[in-house]
Image 1 (cartoon, one colour):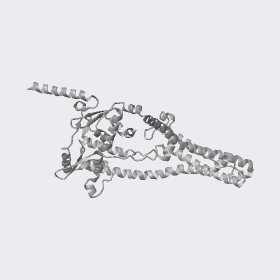
Image 2 (cartoon, rainbow, N blue to C red; image 1 turned 90 degrees about the vertical axis):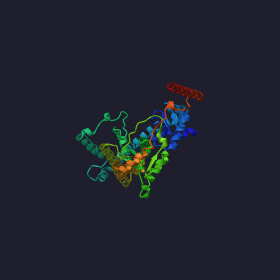
Image 3 (spheres, rainbow, N blue to C red; image 1 turned 135 degrees about the horizontal axis):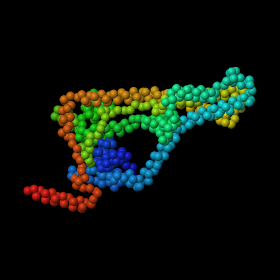
Image 4 (cartoon, one colour; image 1 turned 45 degrees about the horizontal axis):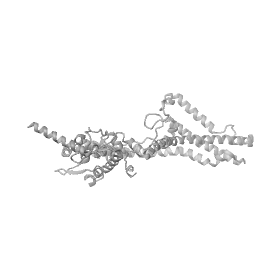
Length: 449
């Protein structure tokens, strides 16, 4: 099982995206992986999926995998099948967790309403009209969540009449009844409540993966040789003073992709990466952005109307809890003994109130936190963009540096027919084929004389 533990999902995805025939450099550049990790991942995957190795005369290795290698792994390890099942189960569980916050809010409001209604009946039956007048303020109208719901629904209904196009029915939702954030589908209301409370996750969770994938593509696009200026738009913290002048920020790039520095006669430094110059097939240049851009965080993917509804429900929960607290105090003053459901609600009253307060306090705090994080993201984006602009404005000295770098640029393609050894066929057969090729080549040259 130790071999299976070394299987790397990024390696598998890189193999699939590049036609199932790759070199270590292909995988490292495509997935942005450390050369050593890519090599270990390929060896582990090859040993578990009966992949074939092809060796060139220079000793370079290409790995050719079966197109159904994931099926081979699933059949070989029940743990992988279990992981896939658990992943699907987790999707369902996480969806239930998301909608549970809205369900709990509405349940909290219903519990408060029912308790107020039950307590009102108890106070009326025991206290008589005088006590009703005292509890109602003498005006015959008691503030209750039922009235609050009516007022909120009335305002929401008036808003629907005024802006009918803003309110779409179930037909505007996705077939599954729920849309993913950023997919263009409208969230259902229960999902919108979760989004209002906690947002929609970090849009830059894969930032480091994107960074190294892009740098790997930049290197391969330039024939495996780059200058520090070409990588700067994709890095952070270039340092200050001599650290920046001596290009110390290139050390992580060299370490990750096993690069080597070369110094020009004029003292300029370029960096070339031998492993990334070897590919299993000839590939065109990958499309890369001018600089690494982070995405700003969204406060919520819920619509403005869903946010208003969420705020309204949270407010109803808080005000209803305060009304219920006032009624509890009045009942105690009248000597009413609380039993059954009402006593249970009294015991969890502070939980109901705290839930309502948190329902509004958490998004408020998160709003300001999101603004602060976005200001940091914007600052980093501007710094990287400035480096990209400067790269396009560099003069003749930089062009000479690039020209020096091109002396080391190349792309070596390992073609199947040019390999000197392959694990796909028996070694004796390969030797016979090799002898036949040599004999044919000798005969061709003899005929040319």
